Structures are given as structure tokens and as C-alpha cells.
Image (cartoon, rainbow, N blue to C red):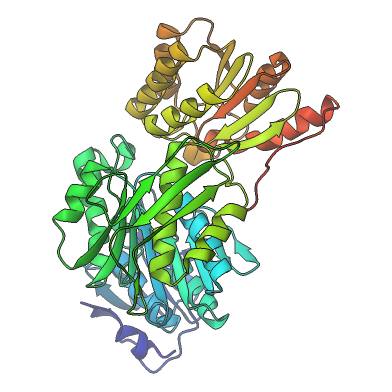
Length: 510
């Protein structure tokens, strides 16, 4: 593209420095100075830890055709430049233009909330595939379309990665793209310019990302930016049982609310009889017509969903995904067949091994998720319980203390023979490295209430300790967010070393 065409996509841009070569062809749009090649347009983004304005000279030395920087910043002598109010916004605008605005030709589905986004996205993906609706997904499990999977560092990728993915999906025949929308992405303008034709709001809970937002109020304010990205009249599927979300949705004009839950005023009533063996059966009642993206509607009616999932949060997530799929164009029979046959979600109440003893793995990132796991553990027949908990690194003292408090409360009701805490020192990256004060908070809270709590710095040592003590008909819980992500591999290696075949639901990409 010519520089002039890209500049036309920018809002509030002003020329600065040397004369801009508007007729020159731009070879690429880059936000990392180390990746600049001759002829590239470099955008200096102020990151959380690194400011791209520090590397303007490097970008110029590498041959940048021009640079984009924030107003008030110093332009290197003799460099063609554009100043903008916010380079994150500029990067999103340039990314959309560079890739031919693929978002304008796709039906976008945005999924937000504190927890449950990944599960909802994964289940929705399975249903849409069964319905024959070509769709791509973007989230914490990567960028997915058909048989192609690309890992991403961020749940909601940077704007360049995001628009490139949408362009590839569109070129591959996708009609719809569903994505997780995080509070970080909203604040950092990664989804600037995107408009969602269908929304899903899972919940809003206390203590999440206090290390970034600073307070729950600011976290909620960040989440409220999500509504700026919903098209007027877009269906918004939400968990009516979450009072804060219900209040927020009630106060929003311009969306078509689709509340899901057990209440009497919801659009979709969810009734849940006793859990089935290894899963849950849900009574799903559409009480009033649901809007579809094609302009039609889903007629009222009642049907059942048989889910290969355990736990209250997963029933909620599956029903939200089912309602969203119906709005997106799936038929009831597609929803039923898909959820009954879908692979077990990875690290979502996942049975890793069912043999001499049982190993259950779950991403518990919040006290409510911890309660959901122990509700299931209390119902599963077992002789003794062994718990391995991975501390949630770089999330602050308060969330770690509250998580430990939730575990301690449940261990009074469901006593454990082994409770071992780990910092997963060999299994986490710098972004999730456990801080000393976080470790102290967890151990202090657990040891204050639970006798015999042990600590192992390494994840493999902690899991090995619990598995070594597990006997016939025992239950082992692996609990933790990023710090426990490698738990399944540790279990598999341990079983292999001890001559016991892995027998469980290792799960697929979902």
C-alpha cells in the first residue's frame, strides 16, 4: 500500500519531522523496532513495561520509511513522521487498513467476563462446526480456523496479529469469527474499531487483575468499554444469575438482552436435575423468541442438553454457548449433538487419570471456581483426598489470600490426607513467577486453618508427592491457574515411570 492510503486510515494524525513520502509503497506495518525492514512503517507503542518511543532511532537505522509516534514526543532529525493522540489506537487503525478491513466482512462474536470466556468460546466453536457454519476463534487457546492452530502470547492478541488472523479466516472461507475480549485488550485499544454483532457476558467477580487495574471499580470501568464495541441491536447473551452483570445489562440501551439462568424473567431458563454419571443433564427452555444474526428468530421451546462436563460453572458456560450458537444460526439438533460429543475441555474439571486412583485437573483462578471443584469432589466417591495447589503468580496478595481462604473453608468440609502447595518454579514464565509475598499469603492462610500443609517449590515434586501417597480409590485434585498448566504432563510422566498406564480424558484443543 502507498503511505498516503495508510495515513488516510488514521484519526487525528499530523505530519511532523521531514516531508512524508506519501507516494512511496509501504512494505509493512511494524510495532517492534527489532523487526523493522527497509520500507516499513514503524508505530511506537507505549507498552506496560516497554515504551516503543525509546527505539525510534533503531527503527530509523533499520530503514523505516516513516514513524508514527504520540503527540509531544521528540522526532529524530530528518525523519518523516506522523504524530497521533494514541499510538495504540493508531496501530489498530493501521492494522485494519493494512489487512483490507476483514472485520467488516465477518460476523464478529465478542465474549467477555471475568472467568468462563475460554470455555464458552471452545463450546461455541464445537457447535458452529457441527452446524456447518465456517468460523474461526481467537482466545487463550490460540487462533483457530479449521485444522490450523496458531499459539498467541495474549488471550486477545495485539491489533496486527488480530487483523492478520481475521484476514486469513476470511480468505479461508470463514463467515464468522468469535473471540475472547479481555479487560486489558479494552483498555489497550487492541479491539479498537471492531464491532460485535453478537455478544456474550459471562460474569464479573471481585479481585480479578487488581495488579493491573488497581481497584475493582477500575476493572469494571474497563469492562464497560466492551459495550462500545457492540453493534446497535446486537443480541447479548449473559448469565442472569450474576447480579452485577444483570444490572449492567439492564442499564444498557441499544442491545437485545438474552438472559440465561434459573430465574423466572430470563429469556432462556436453565433447569438442572441431578448430575448424570460423568456429566450433567440440563433442561434448556427458550421462553421467548431469540434474535438470530440472519434476521430471523429462534422459536420458544424446551430441549435437553447432555454435557460431558462436571461442575456448576461448566453448565453455565455450556448454556451461554448454546444460546449464542442458536443466535448465530445453529439449530437445536446441532447444539444437542455437539455438546454431547465434544472433547473434554482442557483443564476444566478434566479427568486426567482414572485407574487405581483418579486425578482431576482444573484451572481455579478465583474462589468461585475453587468452590465449584470442591462441590464436584464432595460428590465423587473416593477413599482419601489429596490436593496440589499452584500459587497464582504476579496477581497480588489479595487474590491469592482469598483463593487460599476458599480452599481452607472447603477442606474443613472435605478433609484431605495431603495438601501440598507449589510455586511451580520450573514450569512458569516471568509473567507468572510467584512473588515471595504471594507465597507467604497462601501458606499463612492455609496453615492457619489446615494442619499438615506442605510446600514444594517445584511443580513436579509437588505432584509427585501427592501421587506417591495416592492409594486405591483415592482422588487427587490438581488446582491452579498458569502454574498448573504443566500438571497433566507431570502426571503422565509419573505414571509411565511407575508402570501405570494413563487412562483419562486428556482432552483436545478445547
